[in-house]
Length: 242
Image (tube, rainbow, N blue to C red; front, side, top):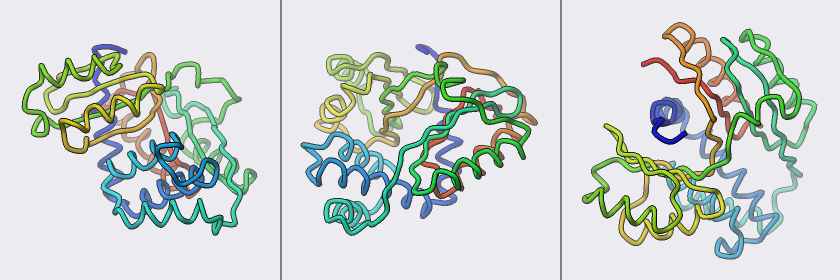
């Protein structure tokens, strides 16, 4: 993984999300509500809630939206019982895809996800069929205008648990183990403003390079999956064409 920039894929995802920001806020709010319901409303005592709030802030989610989602979960006013489900499969060109969902109706969700795969020339696989190709990691991304001294930034990140710090053309990227994500984010917050990306994600072990046409086909499937109400996150191992 070291030395391979993830920013192209992140950039595409952020571009797609910017076009449907309201739907993204709804998905993050659902995660915040579920986290608060399961572990309480105090982010300091609820790591899952804190990580969800960080993700919301990185996505420029309004503070009022975050607070409402926390209160909804902690107050038990959300009557839905959500289950966490992960689906795996292969998309166009054999690209490995992992789809994380929060659903109150598993039959509906699996039907919608399977339909998206089949319509796009892919197929839904069994549990474990592709997830072994991905590693759960913390991922924090800054644009250079937020970092005045890269050497100091690099040292601070490594001192607080970063596995990999990359100086790319457009961004500075940090990768860490999920267990140190919150502590590392806290350390960075003492010196820098909010990052452009801050989340627990799945990073593929290897990437499949796609040409422009194949990238377009994959992007259609990803956009379709991300547009489903029950889908929280979609990960893949493709290196998309410019």
